[in-house]
Amino acid sequence: MLGRDIAAGIAHGARVTLMIGLTSTMVSVFIGVTFGSLAGFYGGWVDDLLMRFTEFFQTIPPFAMAVVLVAIFTPTLLTIILAIAIVSWPPVARLVRAEFMSLKSREFVQAAVTIGQTGPRIIWSQILPNVMSPIIVTASLMVATAILTESSLAFLGLGDRNQMSWGYQIGAGREMLRQAWWMATFPGVAILLTVLAINLIGEGLNDAMNPHLRGRKG
Picture 1 (cartoon, one colour):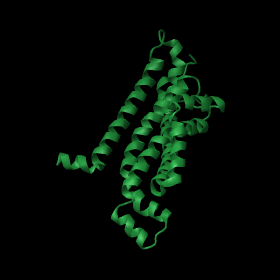
Picture 2 (cartoon, rainbow, N blue to C red; picture 1 turned 180 degrees about the vertical axis):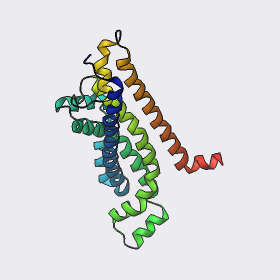
Picture 3 (cartoon, rainbow, N blue to C red; picture 1 turned 120 degrees about the vertical axis):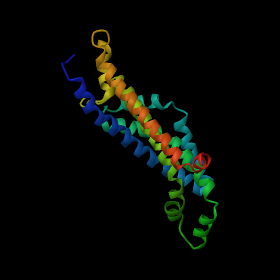
Picture 4 (cartoon, helix red, strand yellow; picture 1 turned 90 degrees about the vertical axis):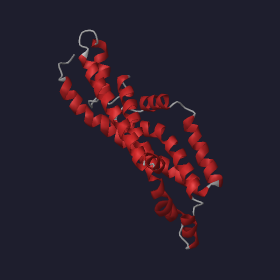
């Protein structure tokens, strides 16, 4: 409608869309790993407190909560990243908690306790390296979800209007579908291909890092 180049917008919007997906995933993984590792390692009241806090966020639909958070604050790249990260970390926390609870009774952890290593050092140097495989696989899939969430927010007009993104292009072109269908179609195809590629990468990482699947294929 404003005479902008669609191809240039897709190329420039890829930077913003991928940056939001990667950054929000990194923040949510950091929060989830922190909560999950503390809850799984220490247990007791620490586990109860952190898990009740995690369940509070899980009771609210993630996308609805992201819409509310972005609508309350001014829609900028920072607020969008934080909103997506806030609604995405609970599954990571529960995954890490389950892995820590299964690993903290292993012999190498008991040996670290026997030689006098502190709890934070055991978490960081002994258990966390053994939990990285499922975390990496989950994070790769979360990037695709974050891209879809950002595109949905921008489609609803809750994106940063000073930045070009694929969701913003689809939202801007929805009123011109009959006259200029390509304005919304090509950004949508870009989102489809990117999400599909990231999901395939996640499945490949899962096959490569899962010892059970490697043994079955062998």
